[in-house]
Structure formats: C-alpha cells, structure tokens
Image (cartoon, rainbow over all chains, first blue to last red; front, side, top):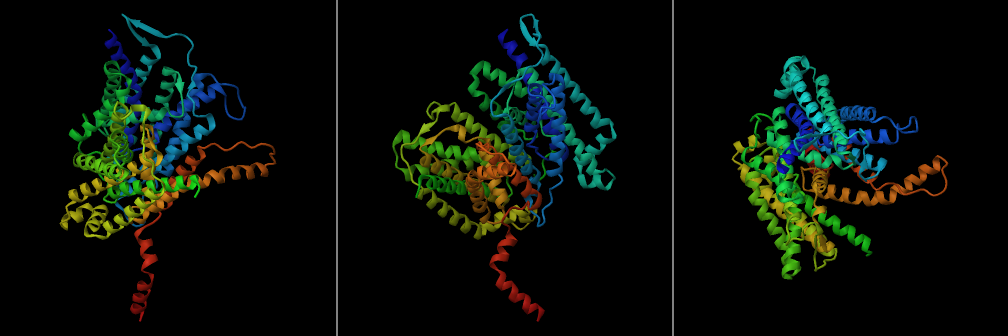
Length: 305
Length: 308
C-alpha cells in the first residue's frame, strides 16, 4: 500500500516535471535552442505570485492580493519576461566572421538571463524559502487508503489539458503549421511565406505560459517557494525531456512521468541521497544507448548546436 | 604579499587552468558543460591520496590530472557519439552523476567533504597556470592544433581533407579533462578542503562562459575570459558600495547606507554575457584581432607592394 502511495506521489510530482519538460522540448524541437531561462520563468511565476499575495503590488499601491489573482499575474509576468528573452537571445545569433559555435549563442545568452533574473529575485526577496498560503481548506481525498490532494489531481488534469491543447495548436492551426515548418527548415519556411519574426515569439509565449502554470501549480501543491526552486525542477525536467526524446511533446510527457516515478521509488527503496544518481544515471544511459529517447525522432536536435 | 591577493592569484591561476581544460574541447566544436564533474574528480583524487595515503603534493596533483584524464578518455568515446544539444546534455549529466556518486560515498566524506593535509601557496598554481598556458599555445601551433581548428571551423571539409574528426575530438576532450582535473587537484591543495557542493552546475556554467566570452578561436581567449571574470567580482566588491554611496548622495540620502547585495555581482556578470553575445558573439579575442596586432608590419609592406 505504501508502494502504491509512492507511485501516486511519483505521478503527481511527475506532472510538474511534465509541464516544464514540454516547455523545454518545444523550444528545442522548433528552434533547436536549449533555453536555460525556463527554470527561472518557473520560479518567477511562483515567486511573483507569492510576493503579490504577501506584500501586494510593489510601491504600496495595493495591499496583499488574493492568491488566485496573484498567481495569475505571476503567470503573465513569466510570459512577458519570456518575450523579453526572445528579443535578446534568439534574434541575436549571427556572427560577423563565421564560427561553428555560433549556434550556441542563444544558449549562452539564456545562461546570462538565468544569472540575471535569479539574482534579481534574490536581491528583491532574499534567498530564504517562503511559505505560500494557498487555499485554506484541507482538500485531501482518501481513495481506499491512498491519499491524494485535490489540487494535485487538478494539476494533473490541467497538465493533460495543456498538452492536448498544444497538440491541437501544432496540428490544426495556421500558427502551428508555421511552427512545424520552422522546425523542419527555418530558411525554407521563411521563403515560403512564414513570417519568422512573428511566429517565433509564439514559441516563447507558450514557453512562458507553460512555465508560469507549472510554477503556480507547484506553489499551490507544495506551499513553498524560493529563488532556487527552479534549479532542481528544471534539471529534472531536462532529464525527463531527454528520456522521452527531444522535440517530442508526448515524449516529454512520458519522460517527465518516468523521472517523477524514478525519484519517488528511489526515495522509497534507497533513501533520498541517491535520487541524483538515479535520475542522472537514467539520463546518461539514455543518451549513450538511445540518444533519440523513447519517442524522439532521429532528425530533431541533431544539427550543430 | 597579503593573504587576500595570494588567494586571488591562486583562484585566478586555477580558473585559467580549468578554462583551458574546457577550451580544448570547445576548440574542436564540442560544448562541454561538465567541467565541474572533471574538476571534482581531480580534487577528490588529490584529497583522497593526500589524506588516505599521505602521498606528497606533486604525486597527488599529477594523479588528479591522470584520474580525470583517464575518466575523460573513457567517457569521450560514448559522449562524443552525441552531438549538439545532446552533447551539452550528456556532459551536464556526467557532472551530475559524479556529484551524486561522491555525495553518496562514505570513503570520500559524502556531504561533509574532506580536509586535505598538504597546503600549497600561490606560487604552485601560478606556476602550473604558466606551464599549462605554454603547453596549450604549443599544442595549438602543432599539426594537431591545426586539425582542431579545422574540425572547429568545418567538420565536413576537414573530413574530406583526411583529418580524423573522431580522433581529434576524443584526444582534445581527454587532454581537456586532464587539465580540468589538474585544476581540481590545485584547488584541493590551495584551499585545504573539498566539498562536493562547490562543484555544482553553476561552476560548469561559469567556466563555459569564461571560455566563450574570452573567445574560442585563439588560446588567448581562456586567459582573457578567466582573468576578466575572476577579477571582475573583486573589482565590483570595491566599486559597488562606492557607487551606491554616490547614488545615495545624488538623491540627498544621508546617514548609514547598507552594503549592496552580493548578488549584484552575478547580475552584472549575466548582463555582460547577454551584451557580449549580442554585439560580439565570437568572444573578446578573435583570430583577426591577433593577426592585426602581430602581423601589422608585414601586411602594410605587402599592401604597399601591391599598390606600387
């Protein structure tokens, strides 16, 4: 019974990884860009939500806001920052003299943004973890001895809905066709009339929304936020993305759940200290044996970085 | 020399050696985001041999380079099968596995770390940094260095010209790993203590930033990058409080002014990174820049001949 409970916990934890992993896989699949600001966007939504519900809008304009509104503004903030990141990373990727590492420019810029945003939040609110006061009522379901918190169940539903919606967006809309065209060949897409300058920001907007929602759900479920919260979740989401296969949305879903389950089961059988080795060992083995991941394609992410 | 400056010189020298380790793999077009892993291997090898067997310093430091080099060579074959984003992730995963393994190891002290009995003063890391710099400059001037540059600039063409891409990349990656390990060994003895929390993902990120911002086209890049980013925080340490005081003075705020947050240093580092990538993404020092500085006389002569 305890094992079954751990499996349920693993799936619930995995659903947070899934959302962030989908954000990672989207930018890699479409733009071939490993966006290191994703963990900070996740943190920004949660920390922003906490700050607004604890202090209110900066400058003393309002008192503390109700938590759903605060988290909503947090998600908008993450989306906005994601668009700023687009302006300064992805649009700047041409070298004057030609260089094989020029594809790494957005990646390195995003590392710079990671340092800037995370440390700005640290300066503003300190490095300590803060308690996020979500809904007051106790929302625990008891399914025959297995405990399940209602917000967690809800977040699993939200995550599944987001992924289905994203799939629909990519398959059936004009923007989605443009995105898939850019994923296949940016230059050809541009020649054939896809407005790259307008379609690419959509990827970053989706990234911001996904990370924001994941951060908000994390704040509600686990009740604790800190400026460092993105690092752990972000690295685990990367592991999930790779295990599932780069550029595959359902792969990210599967991989995120596998990482969540691996983490909980490792804690159950071997203790908390071995989690890092298990998760990263899983990632390393995947990369060495089956680099395209469980559901990935050979062609995606194979180019020069 | 005061202890403060001796400490800064040591860390500067260690960072230069470390940056060269990552530079060698980046110079063949392979982004290596696992620097902290190789440094940790070196640091713990030195700490273990020094603490457990009482071996002299030169043996433990040599062993630290050898241990990381061997692990790098063994890892290079499977890791360099992957490319692009996968390679970045594989090296990143390697560093995390090393950190996790050491964290769970009883003999290596686990989360509490290990103390290292033998202390080395700043002269040793500085000497090592000079030797390593000379070695890398020599290496880049050999035929092998030419092959590295060729692989970096265009893999297909170098392959057609008969350069073995895989051999070049594996050898460069392994030597780089050995240098990163050497930096780890120097670190262990300079600070007399190793703990695994130091060798985290941020360290790998910082060292890659040193190399990329310094420039990967010439061996001058890592020196410039490492020196700039090691000394920048120290310069800011003095500059930031002064700047805040002046700002407060301008706005007519008097009285006690608290010191600005330490995190500002990293904000400035990050902002500089974004700025550099936007305006000069090939790094501070480029091949053309070196050519312009060193070959000016010869070029002007050939130009005058051409015009005449």
